[in-house]
Amino acid sequence: MPHDHHLKDPHTEQRLFRNRMLVAIVGVIALLGVLIARFYNLQVVDYDDYRTQSDDNRIQVRPVAPTRGLIYDRNGILLADNRASYNLSIVRERVKDLDATLELVGHLVRLGDGDVAKFRKRLRRRRPFEPVPLRFRLSEEEIARISVNQFRMPGVSVEAELVRYYALGDLFAHSVGYVGRISDRDLSNFTKEDVRLYRGTRSIGKVGLERSYEKTLLGEVGYENVEINARGRVLRVLERQDPKPGADLTLHLDAHLQQVASDALGDRRGAVVAIDVNTGGVLAFVSKPSFDPNLFVTGISFADYRALSDSLDVPLFNRAVQGQYPPGSTLKPLMGLGGLEAGLITRETKIKDPGFYKLPNDPRLYRDHVRWGHGEKVDLIQAMAQSCDVYFWDMAHRWDIDGMHDMAAHFGLGSKTGIDLPMERSGLFPSRDWKRGARGMPWFPGDSLNAVLGQGFVLATPLQLAVMTATIANRGTHYRPQMVKTINGVEQPAEILHNLEAHPDNWDLVFEGMEAVVNRSYGTGKRAGKDLNFRVAGKSGTAQVVGIAQGARYDSEALQERHRDHALFVAFAPVDKPRIAVAVLVENGEAGGGVAAPVARELFAEWVPRPDTQENTAQKTRLSKGVDNG
Image (tube, rainbow, N blue to C red; front, side):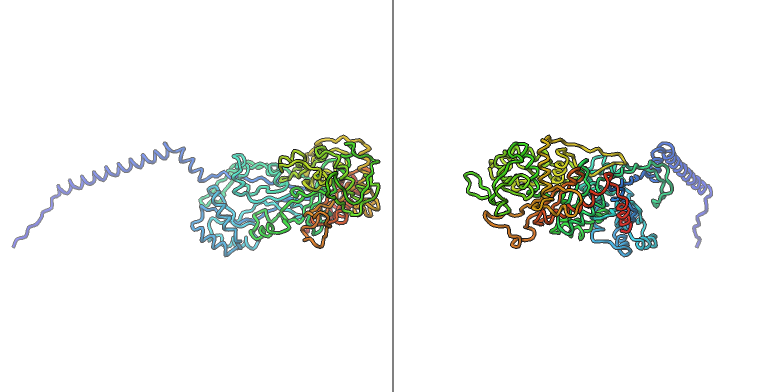
């Protein structure tokens, strides 16, 4: 049976091939046209745009943090330093699995309870490709472990930075203060200029001089353009604008005198402030108990902060400028001067003191601390030396409270001193208008009796009492207290707030009375001048913490320790040419002359024998060695 065979048609095949080839060639030409058009668009039309984007990926502008200014005491002892610290940081954009990376890091270095939580919080406010710190202050062993395992953790690096270090620790915590990490609260208060200034900086002054001189210490941020590779490693620096370091501060504070004051106060709660009578410079500034400011620099742990904040002794509380206490009888020299100036008393004025005072038409008996009284003829000198309340009650009854208030204001009571420290409180010295406005009540005669003894509504900070004493010592020249002596070597001038004009004889009488407190056999402050070869003038004070019922006696044993009276002492020395004024407060110390006066005595023994230049090379060297060993 014959089969059908399809015969080949060469012409048809050739035609089909040509058509297909033509379609292929047209397609290739079209695709080449599209590719050439795209190349043209990239290389010509959008060249500048893509070049800029390319440079942005290759070149980064990085802030360069300035070096924070140093803080020295008056003799050049370094109080606040900058030391190298190595931190573990992570660049989020270079980490594929953050949780896995954090887990791996946790096996290599110790991470505290709050480290990871704080790290995640910092991530939310970072800039792109910015290293975010996870752990601060790595040890050499931890750095080695991270380096060995670096290949397993892309995006993880060890970075060096300068961090604050306080060589004398708790000795200057309440004066120098400390820096801490910039918080969300800090950021919320930043202006646009602040955001610029703090680029590259992680710390800010939190308390003390670190806070009040923040802008001075901070410096000016610098910048650098760097070329980086695909892994983010810096290949070279293309351009750099150096940062401007912060200014250095030299303080009036004397580190050795500060140590003497701290040692004299011991483990008791309280404050000591010493002031240069002739400049207002603060020579010693102690608040106890204190704390280690280094704990706060890179972020305090929850456990450490809880221990400080929950303590009944409130070590974070700056008693010297924030503690407001009844000043008690330390006001008697001031009140005595006011009475002399107002013509209410004279050198010859004498009163009978049976141990109590009674206002006309008032059955209440105001009892002196000496229940049998101080004698038949008590004058101002004896009233100050023995702290006779009846003498001052008799004067206060004849003195208008507004006149008393005005006299107190001349010495800085009832308002902030203006010291260059933050968070100062103003204390209180009442007036007729104040009571009407604050309490909605008129002024009563009994209120004046309380006020003249520094009780009732009257409150003062230890710093205010030191300023008051310095103003008495230089006979009415009221200086603003200052912590900073020089900024980058430029002297900060003393500032006189005002001068009180008083009769020279009245000043002489007040000096004589304060000197009798320390130097007469019956004076309440004899321990302030013990074994000193120069004369000291002072006044003791005891301030009630809880009220005592009418007719009842103060019984120390029946009271809880924290309910016992505060002990106070104010003094200056030497009497003939005053150089230093001191105020001492010992919480619940009870006896101003017995507990607070010996503290003041130690400061006088240390400071007054020094030459007027206040240079003491041996002491400076000794303390500097102690700092180096520490």
